[in-house]
Image (tube, rainbow, N blue to C red; front, side):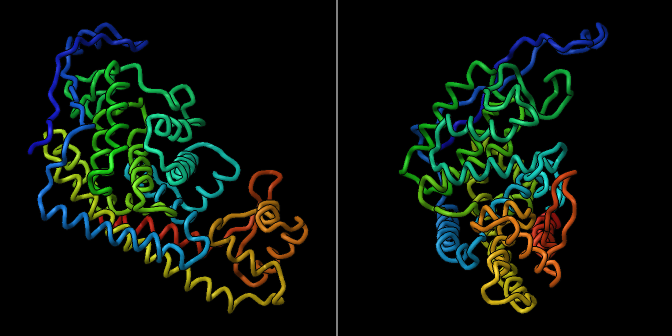
Length: 388
């Protein structure tokens, strides 16, 4: 069995950019090669026994992680979700500190921190959804770009896009996805592929991601949306039910291998992308387990450090901090069903014991942050990035 390789069609190029000089227009190519992408909804996956064995090994590890490791620390899931968003954004060269990202979640803003915060909202939608449909993909994209690029958020592109080469034209690009007229049809076919249950879920997620990236249905944000799509497929197939496995952290260790596997997929070889995702899942389990271990040790350390009475609200705030390392008194009061005055008193106690640090966040908001948890999140990102 073989997998269909991308073929190409020659299309005419007419620049629609404003302010382009006539000299620049004359230098542009009159045509370009645009991908023609085959339907995959009814195809069988041609995988070797070795790759299938690796997929099975990764699936067992992921299922165990979801059922056991992810619940050793009660509020672990939201923190893991943020870690996955940070790793996925790093693949797109978007970096920021954990503190800035958490603050952007609270007060908004612009720049990389705000973009990564939007990616976290997108990942949360992917984990909660479990419905691999075109509608859910568009909604995830809307969440990602609603603030930074509202004019294209949740909308399929209506113009050509390309990867590499010049900014002004697709001539000489590394890859030109299919013409926009084919996007709707190809995405409907991808939805049908993702709805199947006759193949290993992790292999299905890898292929769905590669097909999505080949279609490139949006004008921007395809990489982050495509990686969030992986979590929808895994949730739909029951491999993960409660956490966002940090699979992007696994991909981050070998970005060249990741992009090479996507290129191989477009050439008709499905094996590299499936194998890469199986290995990334195993690395994701390893990193997620490390984070759970560190958080559990930190919680024990906090227990020894906190000097509050046994019935103090401050003890409950410790669990909140593992989920939300940057909080306000209003947020704590809402989450723990207390008054704002009680929440502020508990936070002041934690600050006196050296567990949190307070600072003004904006003109009218005071926030408390856990340097320990924020440092763990930054280290989580750096441990993956160092292996690139």
